[in-house]
Length: 581
Image 1 (spheres, one colour):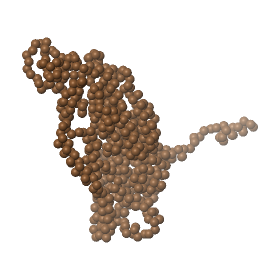
Image 2 (spheres, one colour):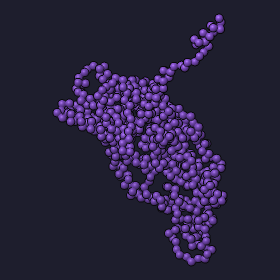
Image 3 (spheres, rainbow, N blue to C red):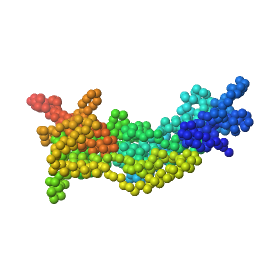
Image 4 (tube, one colour):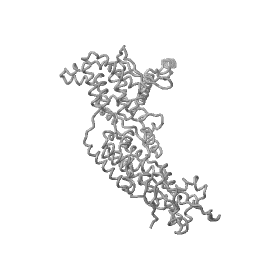
C-alpha cells in the first residue's frame, strides 16, 4: 500500500490526498511541492513524527549531539523511502505530455471539421506535421535528458547526485519549453493553410477564446481519455495541459512561420480567392463585380506579404491585412472613392425619391453606385460588430465560465453546502436561457436611418447634418485620423494617395470621410478592428502598384542603343558594297 496523507496545498489551497514520491509530497491539483512535509522513513516512536512524517509546524527545541544535528534532511532518500528513478520520470512524463498534445490536436481537428465545415483533409495533414516537429526537437532521443540537464545540474553536482536532485517539474518545464502548448493550434492552422482553407489565425484565436476550438479547457477531455497521472508523473492534467494566456493574431502567425521553417515545410501563399470571397460575402457586397478586379490586382502585384513564411517579422503585417488591402484598392478604383464628398451628399439625399421608383433594374443600378455603397457600409458597420457569443446574456456567460474559464474546477473537498449553493444558482439562471437578448446594432441602425428620413422634413436638418459629421470626426480622432473636407474640383481619373505625417511625436493619418467609411468596415470584418494597421497595408500596396507602373512605363519607353552590325546597319551595307566593287 502507498503512504497516503491528506494535506492542504500552500499554493492553491486545494485539500486532497497526496502520494509520497521520493520522500516529498505534491499537490494533485497544481503539482506544487509541499515544503512543510517530508517522509523521513523513520519508524514510530523515533521522535520524528507519526509514521516517520516530518511536519515543519511540529518543530521543538532539542539539545542533541553534533552527530544528530548533522542528519541530512535535504536528502530524504537516505532514510530509506521508496523513490522513483530518474529515467522512469523522464519516460512517463515525456510520453504523457506528447500524447496529451496529440489528443488536443485531434480534438481541434474534429471541431474544425464538424463545427466550421473545414475539409477532412486536415486530419491527414496534421499527423505528418506533428511527427516531423517531434522528431526535429529530439525529445525522444535516448540522451535527450542528459544533454538538457548536463550544464545546470549534472555538471555541478556530479552525475549521480544531480539526477537525484532533479524532480518531475524540471523535466516537465524542459519539455514545455521545447514544445509549447500553443504548438497544437499552430499545427492545426498549418494543416488548414496547406489545405487551402479560408481560415486565418484570427479565426483560430477567436474560436479558442470562445471555447469552440478545444484549447483552454481541453485538459478535461485529455484526462478523461488518458486517465489520472501515475506516481511517476505527479503533475495534474490541468497544470500540464492548460494554457496560461491567449496568443495574439500576430504571434500565432509568427509561430506558424517559425515552425514551418524549423521542420523545413514549404508553404504556399494564402488562398486569396477564398478569403476575398468570404470577406465580400460578409459585407454583402457584389462579388461578381469586385472579385474579378481584385484578383487581377492580386495576380499583378503578387505582394510578398501574402506568403506566410515572409510575414514572420514582428513589424510585418498579417496576411489577412494584405488580402483586405487588395479589396479596398479595387473598390476605390471601381467606385471612384477619392474624397469627392459622396457620403456627405448622401446625408441630404431624399430617401422618399429613392423609394418612389418602381423599376427593379434602376433600383439595382443605384445600389451599385458609390452613394449606395457608402450608405450600405455605414449601416452594416454596426450590424457586423464582432462580439463573442458568450457575451450575449448572463446565462450564456455563466455557461462559458463553467465550461471554459473554470473547467475542471470542483467545490472544496467535503463542502456539500458550497456544492448545493452552486447548483441552486445555476438552476436559477438556467430558467432565463429562453429570454432573447435585444439587438442593439439593428436598433441603432434603424433609428439612424429613421432620423435621416425625418430630418429631411425638419427645420433643424442642417444642424442634425453637422452633428452626424461631427460624430464621424470624433470617431476618426479616436483612431488618430484627421478629417479632410471633400475636394471641390473633381477629376475623372484621379486616384488620391493619402500620407502619414508626424504630429506631436506621433504619426497621424489624414483621410476623407468616403475612404474612412470603406476602411472602417473592412477593418471590422478582419477581426483586427485596428483601422490604422489596415490603412498601412493599403498604403504599402499603393506604393507597390505605383512602383510597378513606373517600372513598366520605363520598360515600354526604352529604346535600343546604337549598335553597329555588319548585317543590318547602313554602314555595314556600304562597306560590303565597297568591297565588291
